Length: 117
Image 1: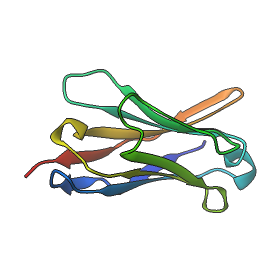
Image 2: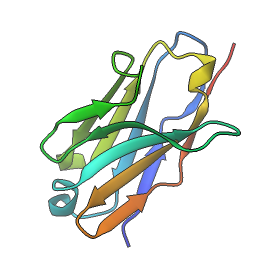
Image 3: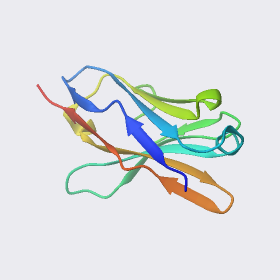
């Protein structure tokens, strides 16, 4: 069973930065052909898509996030990242990692990001 473990969340002041990591307990051969995504769920709201990076490295971002958020991956480490900058209280949410491929779709447990002064 593949597990995705997110880390790097925490409390940050408005305007600050955080880098989230998502480590996959799968073989590098599987991770390298998978699309990786980040989602977030704010209190009282539905889970929303944040960003995706394909197996070939193409990236896409949710509305208004490009320029502040950067998704990347290191297949040698079976890890995806989400670099977040210029954070605002509206970015407060639980951030989830997702790994997708043909016939499989895995989610992590999430990591809390709180933006507050």
